[in-house]
Image (cartoon, rainbow, N blue to C red):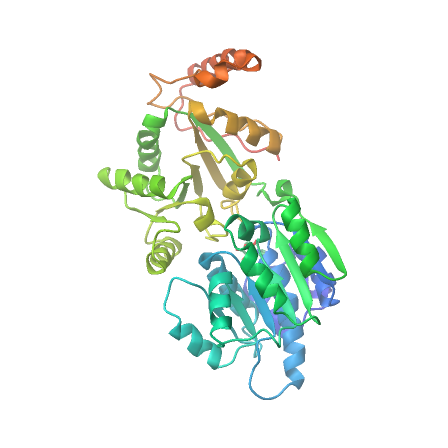
Length: 424
Ligand code: AMP
């Protein structure tokens, strides 16, 4: 199937082909016809699947056809709500790229910066607004913008909104929307609260599910190092020094941890920057911009800040900490190996993280390939923490881990070998 088969307006087709897209991704193939038909949609999918284009293209198509007839000052007819500033900016960039040959205008609003510039952009008139929930409500409360003309609304990354505590803001926003509208609801996971929220927002809807397994870029090669917590920085430094020109995204579970990694890398003369919620918007944008432009090779991010970061040529993802939510692992490694690029995802696992590893491997239904020896494993702890050892069912785990470590670390001694390819 090609984009031509989907019946999208000519100027949009031209823009898509200028982006280098030839074939629609699975979510695009399924969602675009439903949305062109003006039906509501529940999309169970995550970043990396091409979902931004899946919802933006039909909205631009409708707006383009509508504006062909409409005259006068532009009204905000489409609203896309997304949890983070980075995602909002990224969606706006994509939306602009797909609508470049139409007269559709969009703008993006988010918190953490002064509002005046955003207010000016709104006053100039836009067809589509991309917003984070807090700033959107703030400007609505100030009477600067209204949702009364909205015809198309997208709630993006709904589960992340919930995690970030935006649920009440979202409910307030939904309550202000006109009843006559097309609604799109996207979430990577569908816990009970999200199902309830989707029911509040959607009318008669169709569902499209793109499973994480498919979303995980098939070309991502995975590898795992067992390493003591105290040696993680040394191993990281060692790996980065081996690949000084690679574009590397490092995940840290905490903001404090991300700052610490940047500091330690600086001591080894490796330049990096951290992005997380405690950094100012300007600092985050600068770090991301430098990383995207290739002026900065190493970016350290927390999961929320990194969600949706879309960087071409990202060759390596390093999980400095293993995530305690297994789905997050899939999100993280999906940052590399995007659409056509191939990538590598390396994870560090200390003794306390072994239960997380077990959960991840259960979810992805495969063992993350173990990497051969590294220089910092002399005093490697192989036994699980005391509280786990005390549980009878884990008596065997201790034994298994010891065996595993023997098998993994003493078998080969080839530091440069690449991790084996994911079988997914
Ligand atoms: P998203 O899931 O929306 O963040 O998209 C992930 C990446 O895939 C972005 O870099 C898009 O530019 C790219 N992309 C989206 N649709 C296509 C397509 N049909 N062909 C190739 N790349 C695409």
